[in-house]
Length: 241
Image 1 (cartoon, rainbow, N blue to C red):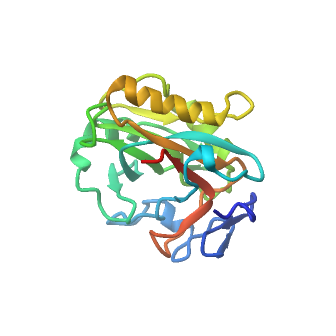
Image 2 (spheres, rainbow, N blue to C red; image 1 turned 120 degrees about the horizontal axis):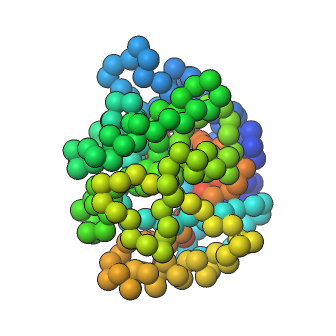
């Protein structure tokens, strides 16, 4: 776990020691983020891949400020909203895209601007087949931007345009929701972590897998070098076993 050199607001630190300054992709530039004049659509980045931090109750202390999100049991999907196109974490077209037709139509109607440009790309968890809760629903936990917006700013922007999923309640099917985050000053992360596990038992379903900790000043790491590249600004904490 590499939180000895956490990412600041202008540098993205990856597990291989590589730094991406700013948010420019390795094999592209700003034109990779929009569909204007381009066909077919190609993913603008690989979805950010968190480092494994192990079970939260055994994790080392983190430096800096971190918030916590639920880790959902679904399919990772990078969504190009205007074209209703979904890519998996390897940058390939998601084979079960048709199962999300209703949610994609809803997401296409979402209007979110970062300055003069409309946001087109959303990082989501797609719920389908792994369990019966919320099938066909997209849980949007981030978006891709060249503006250099910190994590907390992106979360606030999403909350303004999408209803937030209440983690205590099962999501509806064929819907679109944003994913909230837990501030350690308001709820102890370990309590949150254990509460999600209790909800799984209550619902008789492996809906949650743990939590993901995200550094509050981190930028979204846009990169096309490798789908396996891990981002040190995010740490996943699964339950043991």
